[in-house]
Each structure stands twice: as structure tokens, then as C-alpha cells.
Image (spheres, rainbow, N blue to C red):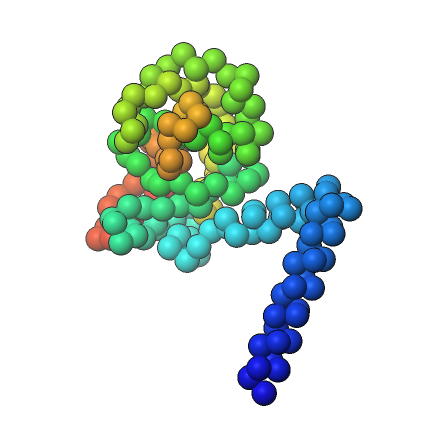
Length: 178
């Protein structure tokens, strides 16, 4: 029975793979749309980020094992994974993430410099229409885009956090107050 089930599962996986391959070749636009929707859902907020229903405008971020506060934010309508960083002056995005968000980094002037974990990097300045973390939405948020390959982790910096009424560290949680 196990071999029959394994054989059936294998055949099913092969059929699904062939079907996906056909969609990719015959209808690449459809494949791209579906793949984009799946990727957006996969990047949606995880359980480490909790809104407080009885306190609208407050979100608590739980520290990961390394003590960092990971956050899934909605930037200009698209989910982006970031690390909250009160030492970063601006929201900082990798070149690749900026491209995914449609910010057209190839047309931005990289005339600034920033220190990253990998050393000095050239950056371009931009303004994000909206940044949403849990129930908190801010408009016109200043941001930096790092040159290609210079930034491996997107940062939720003080251009967002500093505009809040307050933020506080409570044990292993970073609590943001609108």
C-alpha cells in the first residue's frame, strides 16, 4: 500500500510540474501573475507581529532568536520584510527590493553614502507613498535605496519609527505607538 501511495504521489507531482511548465511556456503572463500573488501572500505578516485590538494604533514586535525585531510592512501596497532598526536614520531598502516595489532605482541618483554591515555603500534618496505596520500607516516616508548588492536586510529606520508618538522596549518586544 505504501508503494502504491508513493507512486501515486510521485505521479501527481510530475503532473503538477508538467502543468506548471506548460503554463509558464504557453501563458507566461498568467504564470507571472499567479506567482506574484503567491509570493505576496508568502510575505504577509507572521505571528511575531501582533496588533493590539483593544488599543488601535499599537503594534508589538517580538524579538527573534538573535534579538532582532523582524517586521512585515506594506510599502506602497506591497509586503516587504524588514528589520526594525532604531540606529538607522531612514527606512533602507536593497536595490533589488526597490526594483520589486516599482521605485525604478536605476533612475535614482546614488549621491549619498551610508555605512552598512558590509561597509560603506552608495545610496539614493526617495520618498515612499505609504508604509504600514499592523494598524499604523504613515505617508511620505523618507527612505534610502542601497546600490546593488550592498544591503542584504531591509531596515525599518527612524524615518518611520521616529514619526510615531512613541516606541518602547518591553522585555523581548518592541512596542510601536501611533
